[in-house]
Every structure is written in C-alpha cells, then in structure tokens.
Length: 503
Image 1: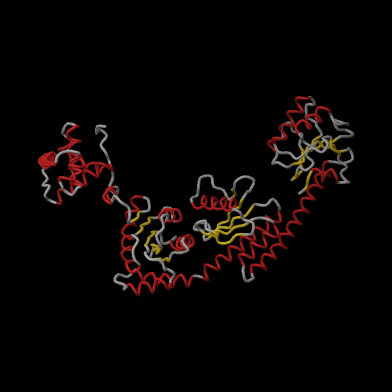
Image 2 (image 1 turned 60 degrees about the vertical axis):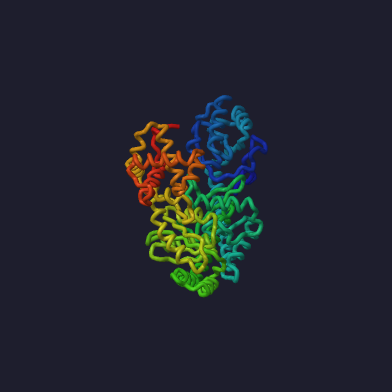
C-alpha cells in the first residue's frame, strides 16, 4: 500500500507538504490530473489529484468549495504544480488554508518535476506491490496445497490460514452447523457466520456475499451455488496477497468437502437401502431394531418426513438435507426424499428453510417397527402441504379445519350457507343461540348434560333448541351423516365467517 508519506519521501519527486503531518498515512490508489473546479464525479477515491490551478477561483470561498468537492470524491491528497509558465509561482494562501481546514494533504510539485513523473512513479510502485503480492500469494498457495494433501486437510488448511494471515475462518454445513473452526473463533464471529448462512439460504432481501457486524467484515463462499453442500466463512482482508490466496483456500476446502461427500456415497446408499427395509409393513420388532441399529438409528421412537422436489433438483437437495440433518437417514424415491429422524421440535421449520418452496409432510412419532405407518402419513400429507403452502405434521390438531382449508373460501362459504341457511333467516339473537347450542351439543357427542353445563342452561333447554335446529334444517340428528354435515358446516363457517354476524 502506497501512502502520502511514501510519495513525500521519494527523493526523485522532491514534493513538499503545506499541511504538516495531516493525512500523511492516507493510502494512494491512483494518480489523476484535472483542472476541473468540481472533479468529484470523475474520482473513484484514493487518488493523488494534481492541478496547476488554471481554472481555480483563488478566493477563500472558491478554494473551500473546491477542496470540499475533492474530499467528497475521496481524494487521498492534492498536489499543486508551481513554476515557470504556470499560474502560480508560490502556494496560494486561500488553497493552503482550505486544505488545512478540511485536513487534506496539499503537496507542492516544483517546476522541475512534471506531473507525468509523479504519475509514473506512483503506478510503478503500485505495479511492484501487486507483483510482490502475487508472489506472496503463490507462495502461500503452495503451502496451502501441501497441507491439503496431508492427513487432516480441513483442520490443517484452517490452521495454516490462521497462522499466516491472522484471520478467522469457519466451515459450516448447509444448515449453519459447525464442521470445522480455526483457532480463535469466538461466539460473535460464529453468530455472524450463521447469520450470513441464514441470509443466503433464505435469500434475504439485500443479501450480499459480504456481511458481519461492527468492524468485522466476512466473506461467505457456498460450496455449490443452488443447493450448497457447505459454506466457507472467513474474515475479509485488505491485504492483496491474502485476497488472492483466499481464493485458493476456498477452492481447496471445497475440494475436500466434495471429496468427503463422494467418499461417503456408498455408506449413504447402504443406509438408504436399510431405510427401505424399515419402511416395509409388518416388520418384526426385533428385526426392525437390528436394522435401525446398523444404520445409527438407535433412538426409539422415530418419525418419517417426506420432501417433494423435482427430478432436476432432488439429488442436490438430498445432499443439502443430509448436511442439515446429520443424525437422519435419507432415501431418494423418484422426486421424493424420505427422511427418518428422531423427533425434533424444529424439524418442520428446518425442512421448510432448507427445502424452500417444496411440499413437506411429516408423519407421527412411532416405534421403529411401525415406521411404515409414519411414512404413509408423511406421503399422504405431501399433497396437503402443496395446497397449504407450508409443512404439515400429522400431530397437528384441528384436523377438520386443516381439511377445510384445502377448499377455496367461496366453496366453503357456499357449503356452510347451504346447510345453515334456515338458521341464518332467524333473528340474530336466536340464530347465535341455536348455533352455539348445536356446536356444544355436537362437541359433547350428543350428550345433553355436558352440553347444558357448557352452556350454563337446563338440559331441557338444550333439548328444545336441538329439536328446533332439526326441524329448521330438516336433518335427523340421530343419524351420524347428518350430524357430520352440520359439524362441517359450522367449522366451515368458522374458517370463513360471515361479515354480517353480530358482535
């Protein structure tokens, strides 16, 4: 990195500063000549901006506006050329004062040093630094490559990177779980890394490859783009050699993670075949436990989840889910991914995040010899999940409302109105009274006393009201079909309530 002090110290340039030590550590990234009085739009930041002041209004306000504009453009320093045939033979006081006011280094170039000499010197130094950085990066890449060929590539690569660069690095799986950490990784770094992974996997609005809180800026590198196998998260460095070498680090880590995945394919196939046996109906309990223990499913009970993907994405998604659920056993079945997993309170949320946009059905928690039942439930719930647009678990309550939500609002409203229309014609007070009585009576399975207790009325009052409902609707409430029709109508009315109901 070239600084203003480096330029001042160059014996061939013989520049002097009119601003003392202000800004001498500013980095210089380029040299630029301009006689514009408003050069900001032509700057990228970090320039040594050279001028002879040809168009510059040499007044206090004119110089202040000029320097302010240069500061807004991000200049590292200003350089004024003096000498024979130039507008100024000595530093103008208004420009010197403006530079001091804004803390911008003002350098003076003597008549014998043309701007082209300063430009060539700066770009020559930049080229030398880039060459040196590239050589350092190549040397560091050789070290990393040698470590990658060793017995412990992941830990070796992260350890070498930490010792050489001083930067932290973490390798996380598809769900943000830790695979490997470099020394010195603290809770704050890990939280930032997990947040970056979460933002990537959910494609949060405004996501970028760089993030982190406070002074720390992190780089996130997914191993595979669409359905990442893992993530490499490291501190972003300002050193160009480390930036070059970080690409090699990420490549070597990615190769090792891919190698591990490929090496584990035979074992995954064996576990998938064993899961297929466990999902067969009628498996004896002893045999089921034997098979489950052989593939690491030692916990009992278990549950089955099914994720429906597409033929093009199912393979990558299987890998991603496997990384997110290391304790699970997976089987790919056409476009479905069947997952055997111990009960997890966050399983639905995790699968919804990892398999975003896919239908997810989750069976009940069952003994290992009854996994076929859980699988049947999960498969049947996939279609329900596709309709509802969310994961559906067999243990969810309100099954009737779940089924009702599969219909459109118009259909449900039409059905409930058709069944309850005779009651809707009553005065609001009587209508609500009869509907509440009917609902409590049906909930009590036709028992008079429990319904009366729930309504705080006499059992004869309940009987009279139910008789009136039967007469109005034409239903025989001794018949299960008629009771169910009224029950479904009430539930449909609850899902799509009428807007004219009284408070």
